[in-house]
Figure: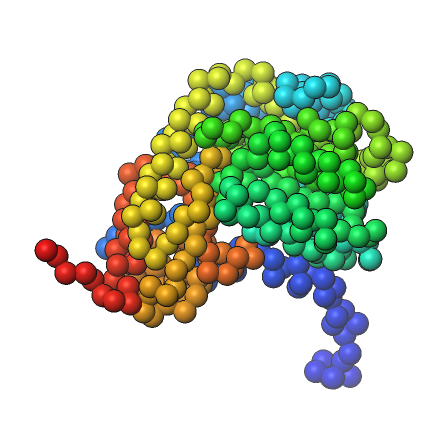
Length: 424
């Protein structure tokens, strides 16, 4: 039989993979990268992704570096993780998280993951089944949606309200939920909005979830990275009201996204998730997946115990400075509206006023032309479910951030529908 006429039995791959892949920022970033003049006279300024690790000002703590180096030098962590290594790492995470909770987590309440992405994948794999639906924020982090879609869940979006500091629209949550709603996802501190929820608002979310009989998945990968008037309160504080799965990692607070160490913490002092078998299903699924690198597990107890508070204070001070730069520069930029000064995470969301622009059709067109003309990359809000909005990261060296935002300002001025105003 000729090869061209053969019927290949693998010709129909899982369509869920293609559907899930559409929920990613990477295609947008690749598209923008293609618009750049890499050989241009000015360096590219990427304000589109939240990875400040390459900036000298955002280097990780020396104690963290030494902990990893010591783990490697010891020769004790070159093989598969032992029970003792895994237990010590889970105990360190449990103690770290318990500092902010009204009850104590045990090592058995913690599952280790290869970054927060694997934590999202694990939770969605366990909860996902045909007929189930999950409530996700808009705007939101696309990987929540991608893994929910891949695991056959219907996604229902509730809005974050910019005029109320990007709070959850709880009336919408009540209207969206039904008997098949398994969970609501919240991100606090928030990516992409830069908001931080108050104790009172989190309490209302917990009460709503309790009434509706769904658990809360709290993505707290930006936990403690707050610099406004609202302190960080972990959702696990309300574990007595509603069971909470807390997702986290060292990637953001320690500025080491490439180290790939994350966790799922079961914040459920009433043991509801054990009674409903969710706890056992999470542990069973983790047996199918890879663990964080053994030497990172070996280093974690020392990283969490020995990192100096001065390091955290320095990062917060720097983020507060760069958030202020971003907010001030954007406020002076015609055609871009900032509804909320960021108070946490690495990001802010801003709205485009297309009525002021002469030759820009939407947010994607704006970002493409900005990349081509100014060598600056911003993420179009369409990638996050918010057409004609933009996400900007301010986790960058202050001079580079200011320069990038000045280029954005020049770009907007040049594309204003009424031209450049005359000078008097």
